[in-house]
Image (tube, rainbow, N blue to C red; front, side, top):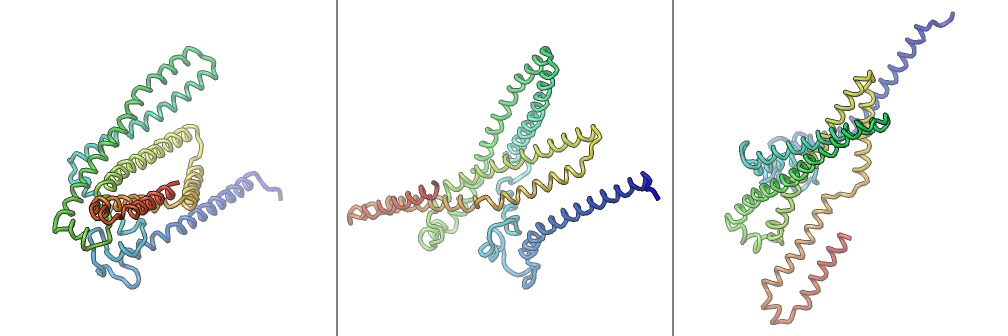
Amino acid sequence: MPTTPAKVAARLAQGVTAKRAAVALLVAAYGAKKLYPVLRRQWAASGLGPGGGPGEGGLGKWGPAEEAGASPPGVNRVFFVRLLRLLRMLFPGPLCRETGLLALHSAALASRTFLSVYVAQLDGRLARCIVRKNPRDFTWQLVQWLLIALPATFVNSAIRYLEGQLSLAFRGRLVDHAYRFYFEGQTYYRVSNMDGRLRNPDQSLTEDLVAFASSVAHLYSNLTKPVLDLIVTSYTLVSSAHSKGADTAWPSLIAGLVVCVTAKVLRSCSPKFGQLVAEEARRKGELRYMHSRVVANSEEIAFYGGHKERNGEEESAGAGILTFLF
């Protein structure tokens, strides 16, 4: 009996449905494989896992004391507790100066994203005018492209300026908080004479605070603008595809899978930048600590003639920094 076209179409539809279901199952399995270790670590860190209870262990100054000392750095309960305390320290209220700077900075980043979309549209119009050989429209679009450079330059400068102001505001909050704890209860004496865990408190209270404040302000820019660019660009592409009657479900799924695989590959191939930065700061702090010892004990060093030994120690520390950096 010959097969009718309706039956052929039904079989093809069943085959396409089966392929889509198989791909969806593969994507779900991959997501479960990647999310399960993260959820398991968070479940274990929350104190609800085997051998632990929600009431066991004490909270230290920055979170659970045992987890802070034993568990490696990662996105877990300790991280979120410390992040919440840090945000409360940097933003003491909804109407503080830091909140206003953050709002202005966010508005500048959003303006830069929409300007980028508008410039991309102008580029498309310019290419269309060149293809159509229309010099009049090409001249007008080129004038618009040149005029948009003025607000774009202003927005770029505003982003850098607001980021610097936000970094200074964060630095002021961190310095006040650190110095308040450093000078209460004779902590300055105990750190220098009774506790050897922190050998260079001057490095931590000066350069490390400045670097941390700048990194936090820069991190917000590096996270907010790419995420906003991704959302706006994805929305524009999906809207354009819908206007032309194209399906966007599977391309979006494939794009998300490609992004996840690429992020996994980059994460596995990239070095641990956090540990590298921490090691660089430790080596610089060690060199500064040695120099401060020379300044504090200069009279004894000059009397006993120990300048050669001190010179050798500082040269060795400096060479260690250069070797680590290069």
